[in-house]
Image (cartoon, rainbow, N blue to C red; front, side, top):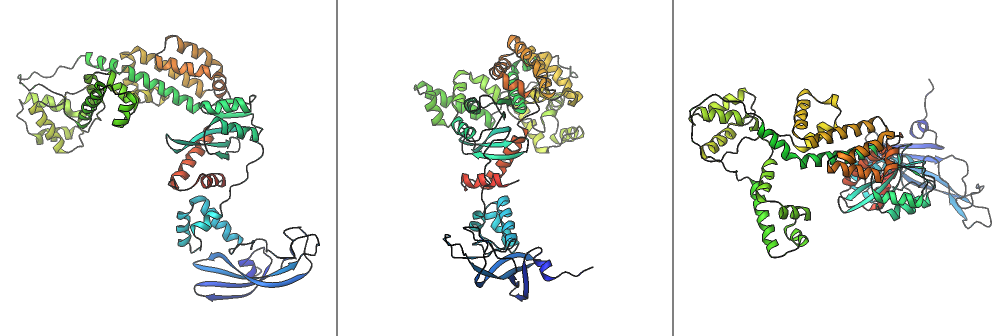
Length: 531
């Protein structure tokens, strides 16, 4: 096997000759001479013929093990013999090793640029110190340059928004759906900015988007012949919101059905007189009482809804709800929002044992009994509940009514993924409320259209939903009718905004890592520079 020279080890494929390697202050100093052919004038691109002089450059190279490497490279300065060229002399650059106006090698510059792209400024500088690389955050950020945007837009273009500050300012990310890479980033989500970009970059024939009207308006103005494709994930998300709203509106049906169910007869016990139960004064209930009093006090003074919202730091919808709803209904809703604690499944058993024993039972004994039944909480929680039973302030055991969000998750999931208990509970919900049953049937039918891409059945589904569906489902169907062509294309063609959503998640990661200190230009550069 042929032995390798020092040049082959340190500078493979680079036209240099190593003259000396020395050790100095924890660094390897490599003295080298350029052996490349005469260079080209950077102005007129004419190859040089005459040498003007030579001098020594100092370049930082990538570390070797734990030791820094410094290259002292002797290069030549050439004459430019072209008379009409403004440059008289120029210095040669060794390909793969040196660049103009840089004190680091090409390889080290590539390392630093990659670190800056992945981490940004300060985090990249901290990593460079750990790797024994000399680079500050300012130098690292200067290495970042955004790649050029192609003159023509990709054939299949994906567009979606992302938040600089959620609820306040937004930007737009444009993605080549076929290649799976970001094409450009826009500073806002207005239709005017997107229209200008589409006009300057023609070529998009298929545009995948969400339900944002600004992007629809821009597409119709700039490229009216392009085919718009509504994203299937956003369609299912909008459907899920309509189903959940239906469950919210008919939650009283579930409560009424649970109260009408026959209660299992308990063993006869001697009657025991308990104090009348009253609603426990929890934090959320007290907050609801105070908020109701504050809002109605200001309403009596003829304050406007907007002024009350600003005064109490509330949303106007919340103020209207407290204005139009009775206090008892608000308190019942607040009670239902209380999360079920670890003791909730065992309260019925505790109440029965407490009644049977005429209140003469220790908390330790009951704690051991429910612990054998699966209780994993503390003993103090059991004692507090018994104390509330003796004082008559214990909250009555409520029927186990699933939340609207949980019902929606059962409806939106495929039937074969539900467990037996979930399927049984969903059946009880369907028996309790015909409107939720109708919403469930329509939602599952639409989900099948989306999963199997049966866009030709969409119009028939819309007609059925507009006839006898609950109001939220009718609103969703009317929303689909307004955007019928794009939704039909989304349920027919293979294109979707899934790739775009993945890049939006990556943009969120980059944005949060920069903590809002960096400019839009730096964020755009990091988004476009990353593979």
